Amino acid sequence: MKLITRFSILGFFIGSVIVLAAVFTSDRSTASVGLLWIPVYGSAVGLLFRLVEWAFYEGKRSPFKWAALLLVVAWGAKSGYGWIKERQIRLQLMDRNLQTELIEEIRKDAFAQSSEIQALVALHPHTSRETLIEFSKSTSDFLVGRVGENPNLPVEYILEIARGVKSYQRSYGIAQNANTPVEALEELANVKETEFKSKTEWSLYQTYVLAPVIKQNRISKKTFDQVAMIEPTEVFLAYALLDSTEVNCQIATRLLQHENPLVASRSEGVFHQLKCSNP
Image (cartoon, rainbow, N blue to C red; front, side, top):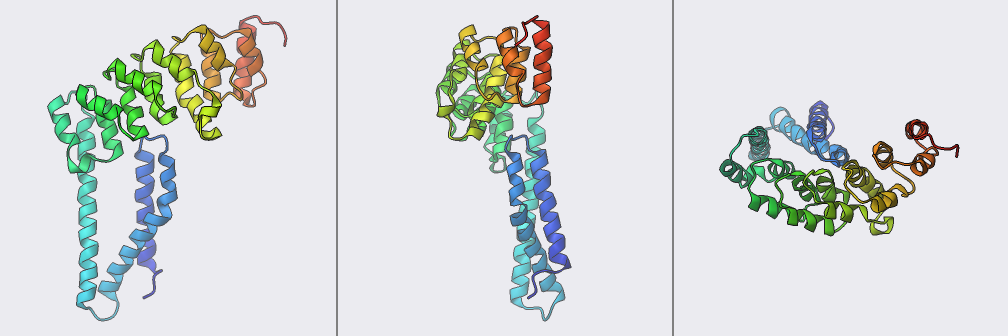
């Protein structure tokens, strides 16, 4: 059986579009990784389309062909129903007035177990305290990060997240939560590059955790100065430092040499605004 035909190519195209739609409608920071799955899902859908073509249009029909076709139809029906059901649940959770009892029913639904839907539950203002606590203890860094954004998460569990493993996915939620206590913000800010597995993880932590912590303007001057000395400074952290009420000539002078021209330009503006001496 020839695998590459017009039908299989059409199937590959449809599978690729489905993956692209999933990636660009996801709110996960790592959603772009899904693009790597285009060849896999595209090929799988292409193969299914090829089976349909083979069963209907090629050679003599047989029980085996009908069984293969039935398998394809069953898989398509199940996937289609699941997709529709998941979209319905998403729409329900977008209702900010949804009551706690209904949220609890939804989150236990078999079609509500994806990380994206659980994240919507974690962010909802009427999610129960018990569920928020449960999510804060999850092994999923993504879910912990999401529940950390919820202002209803009890303070003791915000502190627990802050004192745990340093990860941008786990910590970015509490970093921007206005109810996060200063003690937790200090914990997030007192970090070193050696605590991270890679330079990429460290860069992401600067962008998604340290920058929001600085923007809150609630950490001590000592901790602020410590963060301000991080080299190299990621772009979003640099902007947060320059926009802070604690910015000084030392910071502005250092960031004048930043590799990003926009940051360097902003630093120059702050430098002149503070009436600093020429470096």
